[in-house]
Image (cartoon, rainbow, N blue to C red; front, side, top):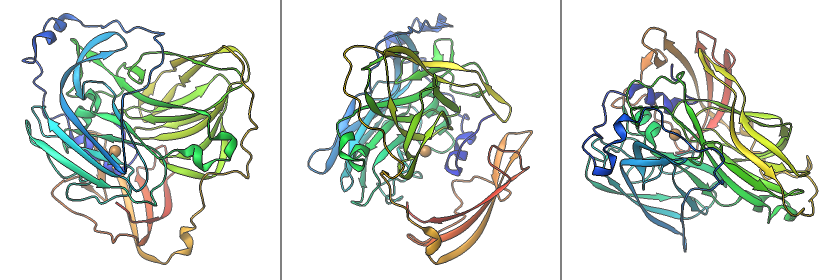
Length: 417
Ligand SMILES: [Cu+2]
């Protein structure tokens, strides 16, 4: 079964209809066909993805989507990539910047780019999930990120309807960092070390990432920045800011670290207006957490995902990364207090409500197809056209009422992109 955290991702489950034709690719792909179980190297040094950084208010760059022989923790695996890597380059920009990104589609399928979580124009050449870039063709993306945009970690991925689960699962996703959450904290945190952690899993069959009929309950290999169980070395006494994103297509994580707590300062690109300590954090696909982590003394820690059951899928406990607290001790800084918060509360209840709506989510147990208000997703049908900036009261319910969410909830939300 396949699960997603929000309605946008329901479209993933409609994917898998098209098989990828990787067999005829470059010569260096040949010979991997016999490689049933690639040998991933554990304990490689932690590295972060390549970056494309904005300059003078513009993030210029190119993403090439193509069938790729990926290097995943020292093993060669066939998949797909943006610019050759299992985790695409991180886009780093500031609120107020414009993204001018060229996409060259080297796949044999349509694809596109979705800027997940951005509050931007959802049409035209911007964050337009309905735009389909044909095989072999270039496309330009122009995304104007408003000055008022929240700072934090986001992600981008293929959102080509009917194919996005397969394309993301094979590699077509990466992280985005807008601004720098340290700036929103008291000055003593302005120079703490930051780490980008992209969580992504893969299932390999015959030397290639499974592209069709993905079973999210099947045995999978978890990676951090495309490394299996890497080794991160941190200084005793230090506090770090970790930007963590689940940029995989299907599975959940429940992250924890040997009794070391996470101070949550941001969630899904929203700076917290009340930070808190968490011993573990659940991460559905698309989830992002920004946390402060303090390493008191020299020791070896395990950053792991705890065992997690998700409606019939069982994800076993797995070590994701070894953390070696070692080297010269640094002067500790005082922990964040409950009164020191990076975000500002926006009381939506104070806004006039333009509409009330009820959304009922359900799944056909036989076909595993998801429905909203009894209807299956259809990219050619527009169900709702909310006005930008208006407040709605949405009531969400599941049918049957057995999801990880409670039976129903009410939410006030404001239309953005
Ligand atoms: Cu998304």
